Structures are given as structure tokens and as C-alpha cells.
Image (cartoon, rainbow, N blue to C red):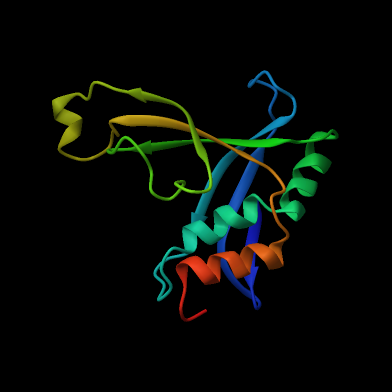
Length: 141
């Protein structure tokens, strides 16, 4: 796991998993990504994703698997056909719609869609990513 810090404050975490079961060794799987809560800042989850797509994160991933990494791959589970969190940063690789058991639909334990996303690794530095997030998503950070 990698903590995402801004000015010494943790804003979120992401974690990579070795790509052994995904076929392409140049792709690394992002097992988890989440922002801290509660917070006064909107769209911190986008900032965590921007950090995961950074050159520094790419280097960490490459050190973990001992070879070059070109892309990040991840999976989202949602009641909607797209996850707004990944929109604009990742492309939909594929989407599976599940038939939901009516008994589980009431407690929201099962999501309707499983969406796989992919994006190029190392798109910007952490500093460039923070500026990008600030310009697009934050007026107060």
C-alpha cells in the first residue's frame, strides 16, 4: 500500500498487486484505491488516482515487479454502468452486468456492474498531478 500525502496530511491510499494472473507483464493491477473520509475537500478520490498514475507511482510499481510497467488496470463495482471516480483518468476496458438476487438488492451488498478500467502509467509527476487536480477539482486546497 502507498499513502498519498499532501503537506504532511494523508488524503488516501492505493495498492498495487503483481500482474501474474493478468497476462500482460507490462500491466500492473491496482488492487485498491480510496480517499480518507470525512473531509471538507471534494473529489479526493480523483487525487488518489492521479497519484497512482504518476511517474513516481510507476517507479514504485516497477520496483515491485522488477520490470517496466506501461499501464494500470483496476476493477470497480457499481450500481451504475460507469464509475465517475475513474472517468477522465481511466478508460473502460470492459463491463459486466450481473443479475442481482432480489434478497441482496435490499441491503446493497451486491453491485450491478463490474467495470474494468485501464490507463497509462507515469502520465505526470506528483507535483504536476496535484496542480492538475487543484485546477480541475478544488478551489480550496
